[in-house]
Length: 385
Image 1 (cartoon, one colour):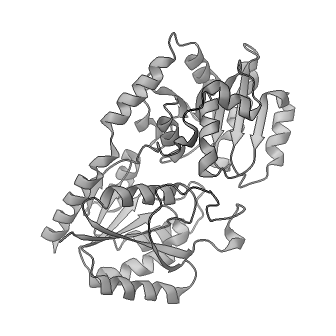
Image 2 (tube, one colour):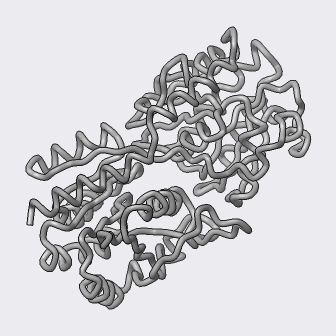
Image 3 (cartoon, rainbow, N blue to C red):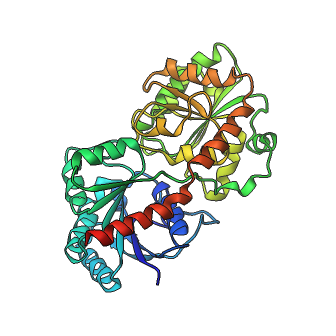
């Protein structure tokens, strides 16, 4: 009989990187284990959600899988219904997806009660410890939730270091985010065809900033780097694709101030799955100018399209970039360094080498080993009981 694993976290029909991670995790683990996903009925109250909508409106779901929707993040009655439901399932392992202190009360309460029932079986998969834009109460909520963990699975060195400092007595396992090569709906399109569809000049050196816009993403630094690039080559073009989670006007104003309006295109919306590929296929280079981060699914999507990256040296991002081979690493919050990193790519003697290097990197860092990692976790759980 297969071991029973329950994953607790946001999943389809919710959108975003965490739901995408759960979908990949479910697919990978279902080959060897009996996996069930416990999902949310309400993720964020609409008043607290900065975007337009929380659920995925794509016509095509990525790795669609079943889930049991039980948890309302602000309704304690749903938390106890969830505890009762999981108790009846008697799983061998309960894995909570942890990424945001807002869920400290809901996830933390569920985890605490389940820890009493299933001591030794509580795992927290920690992509992030504290929010990138943390509030004064984030540490309290994080500790309230994570203190119930028997063990952790971390996805970067920087998070591993943080978890070991917080809980030196607890077992920590290591894995990585998967490469998101699941958006190839228009993979037959050439770069020229993709640009034609978007109305972009074939001769342009297109830089792609993809994903929702928040202060920690450092988009302003990339905008400030554009005049430095255009001084040397008027063909540089910035493609900004993603929903704004803050005022768009200040970015438009900065673009005007820098005199680069003709060299920037903004697509202010969450991009459906079936439309993601056209932006990556049209781009020469994907830029992540983040001021802070632990990881980013955007980088993993870029690698899925074999696109090189320019990435700031923050959090766990440098772990995923082989400098000069799969992209370039630059100092954060520095538009001059960002411009120099971008120029390094376009001055490379053979840019096609980057795609080959990315393919090699992917083969060396396969997510499929996650089955082995969970087998080790389950074995440790058994010995720990």
